[in-house]
Length: 136
Image: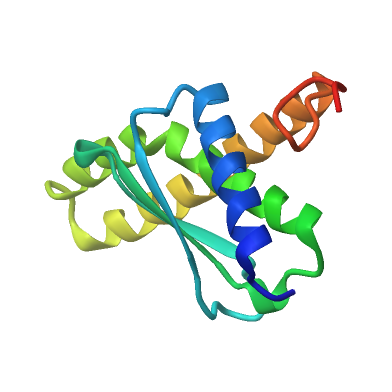
């Protein structure tokens, strides 16, 4: 998929709509297209204390606009639990390195599981990718 002006406009509107739906509208969320690992369509870096996030998407691995918006929505959902990550990092400063390694792994699995469950909930509520119920 190629980035163009139309895609930029759609993603900006989409991000703003989902920021509102997820109660993170006061966050500064930037979108950057970059190259990621072969099995990674997107990722998100967050700074909860500054309420800022950078969503990175490998647009070369994205097949269409629908998939792009799904990846962005998934990464936006990670922002919802960003403060838990801050808490984990603060606690880990006081733990031995071998425990930190285990903690990181468990947290990553739990965080991804939470986001997948949020996505499942959104889909069950029949909220379409535009962030609205079936109003098109």
